[in-house]
Length: 239
Ligand SMILES: Nc1ncnc2c1ncn2[C@@H]1O[C@H](COP(=O)(O)OP(=O)(O)OP(=O)(O)O)[C@@H](O)[C@H]1O
Image 1: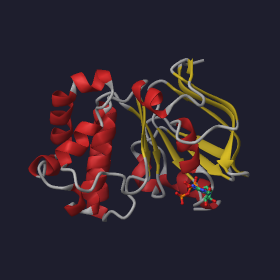
Image 2 (image 1 turned 120 degrees about the horizontal axis):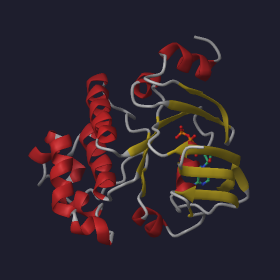
Image 3 (image 1 turned 135 degrees about the horizontal axis):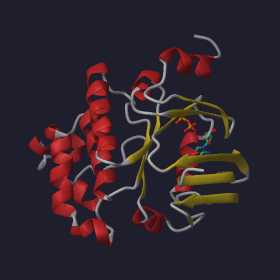
Image 4 (image 1 turned 30 degrees about the vertical axis):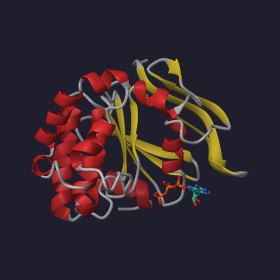
């Protein structure tokens, strides 16, 4: 069996007494880029919160690069290179683009690389280089999303989790973002991407998991790209 980047086994978690993840299991090999789709409210974000130490697992295990990280502190999980860019606006609104990016490199290893990493983010998103001194509250939605992904990259991820990166973006910005994520993957960063738009995942993911009712319901894979029709069939039951 291929060496695993991430191995999630029988994971249960939820809020208060309400379960959301119902024993979810899946494994991701090193180098694989995986897409995750599924109906709203079926536990995708909850899964990522649990993987990244923001929510306690009730039972089950999460193994990352061969080490058990179940319920480890979030800061430790980030230092190990499992970095989650959550959905929505999570930037510090009164800090500038550059200040927000710098905070993404708070851990010791990434801190030493901070200057180089910022230049890499600016090369990837030239719009941010032009706006490096601008407060994040005045950025457009698309620019904020770029800063959020940039913050994730500043932490030097081994595995970068992007939770609905295209939410609210225009078709043109979606295309630009897809090109940027493709570039991130080419640079050697493995990704898991949650996305409602199958076209966005088509060229980026080599495997797509459908998460429904807190478990992996079904999956499809395709070397060298996934057929749009197969993704739509998986999602809706027909093309
Ligand atoms: N902080 C919270 N407290 C209580 N319930 C929550 C909390 N966050 C999420 N939930 C509930 O957990 C369930 C799963 O939510 P989650 O955000 O994981 O879904 P999702 O699949 O990511 O959905 P979406 O695609 O809409 O982002 C939903 O019923 C949601 O209302």
